[in-house]
Image (cartoon, rainbow, N blue to C red; front, side, top):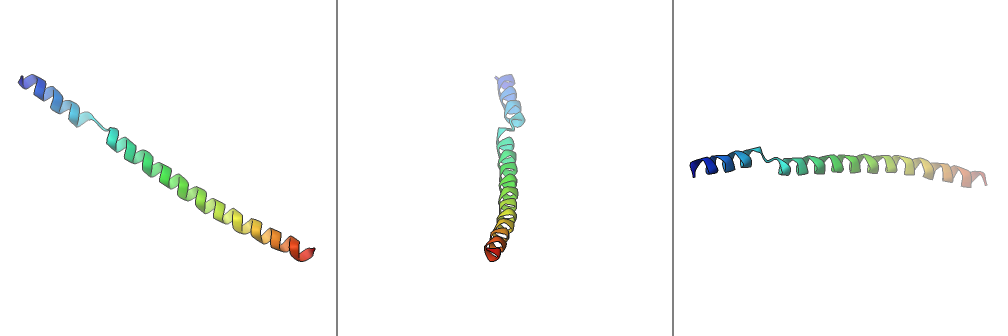
Amino acid sequence: MTIILMKFANSLCRRDEGATAIEYGLIASLIAVAIITGATAVGSGVSATFTSVAGHL
């Protein structure tokens, strides 16, 4: 019985699925922040271009 409990305790210590899920969540949030930042910069540039074109027309 003791061996079974020790094996079970060791298997609990080796599980890291929760940590992996948290890491994937952090990576996804960093990618989202990068996309939002890039889209904002591109959007500002496109807006300035359209304003310039409208001024020349």
